[in-house]
Amino acid sequence: MVVRCLALTFGWPLALTANAASEWNLNSKASPRPSPARGEGSLEEERAELVKRLEMLGVIRTPEVRRAALTVPREEFVPEHLRRDAYRDAPLPIGEGQTISAPHGR
Image 1 (cartoon, rainbow, N blue to C red):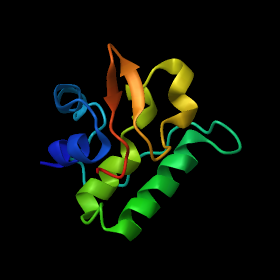
Image 2 (tube, rainbow, N blue to C red):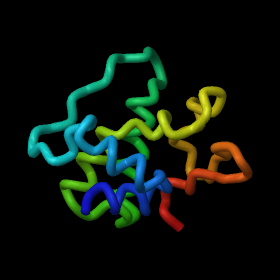
Image 3 (tube, rainbow, N blue to C red):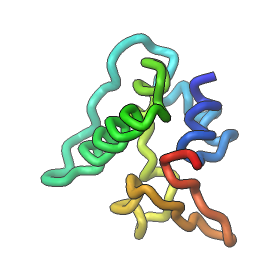
């Protein structure tokens, strides 16, 4: 269920998220493990800010979805040259004329 919510909320391909769910340990009750720091303005910080905004907007309403959103790196679903834009609130091209949905879930 959490994987499906993430796929719909963040525009991630459902098959990919289903296969990756165990890799990111989404069924664990533990807090997400931090990723290695990338310096000032890191993607991890941007992910946390996005989750905070989505919680304030009521898009993220459960601890399970919050934990998954903090754990799953959205930047891994976009082309390398767009990784710095992964947490921007806009659809991003992913190739073949397709886009990953904007994080706000509209």
